[in-house]
Each structure stands twice: as structure tokens, then as C-alpha cells.
Length: 95
Image (tube, rainbow, N blue to C red):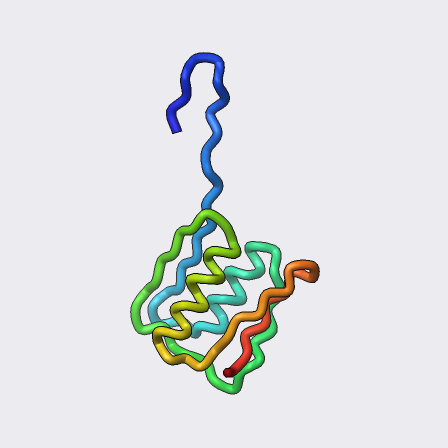
């Protein structure tokens, strides 16, 4: 963001999630969550190999989780994200 004289230069803080090709979804989510101050409970008997890398950059963690939930739905993974904000816990459940 460009500023005028006397104004502060404030950059937007974006949150990024990268899911790497060839890795397991559960492990990638745990790595991302830990870097962002969450604990993850993978409450599913199924895991998924990431076939193509996915890169998401959003304005905040909530929006990243919303987009991730949309991805789960569009790919028919049968997974749901539950976010317990007070405890900083993400639960990945089967539908």
C-alpha cells in the first residue's frame, strides 16, 4: 500500500495455506495449523494424498478455513471442519 506524506505504511496481513503435491492432507493441515497456533484433531478414518499442489492466500484464518471447507465439499472428501476458536482447536470430522 502506498502512503502519502505523514501517513503510516500499513501492509495487510494475509494468511497462506499451501498443500503440497504428494503429501497427505492430514499432515499438511497439521503443519499449517501448528504454525498458525491451532491444534488439530483428525477425526476421520480416511486420509487423502494431495495430487496437485494447492495455494490459498486469504485475509484471515477464518477465510482460509472457509475456503478449505468449500474444497472438501467440491472434491467430495466427506470431511467437515469444526473450528473451536476459544480453544484454538480444529476438528476434521467425517460427514
